[in-house]
Length: 250
Ligand SMILES: C[S@@+](CC[C@H](N)C(=O)[O-])C[C@H]1O[C@@H](n2cnc3c(N)ncnc32)[C@H](O)[C@@H]1O
Image: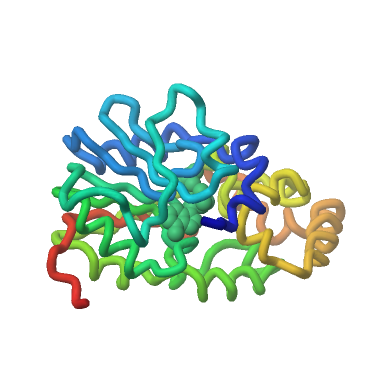
């Protein structure tokens, strides 16, 4: 089983730590589920510690970064989960669905193995995003819009669903693409970009020079300085929650 994260994930944990506020939100949406499968689990962020959790992760490199204390993990893919029907109360998949080769097959599997609840964290490709991808890296915005499934499509796999906007705190501990919206110089760090898969796929890094220049001249502050007053910002991250549907078209 070869995995993209075997190539790009070696330093994942350095900047991709669980953010406690997002963890609380995810845990509250899992409601009273006692058994949870975390699909695309990576190094174990957001796995609740007060329930029985099994992690599913295809990348050896990511599995190696799980701590000894974290939940037991199975090396497998979302598209073929090695569990019986309704084996868990809930399934969660955090910032991973867009990495699956067949998100439809994966979501059908989540619906099959979860009895009561599915909780997905994703970025809505219909959202306009934020200054980094609007102004400096429109190629990332374009590519991410192609690779992330629209939220409406995810809803096809859920009954009684709802979508929760997840504003990103200005000091978000989990260094995903939008995490540094109020810390612009962070994007100049190759180490930080190394934890962001959108940058791994981006060939032209020349806009970083413009960002560096704009920060030095005050141009960035002139255009985006009002963001420095905000504590959190909605830039398109969404929790998509519902009951597993047993009626997805084949
Ligand atoms: C951005 S990481 C998110 C990891 C973790 N959920 C977190 O929030 O830190 C995406 C993860 O999805 C995993 N992944 C990629 N393809 C997958 C698939 N087909 N099935 C399950 N997981 C997959 C990757 O190996 C990687 O660990």
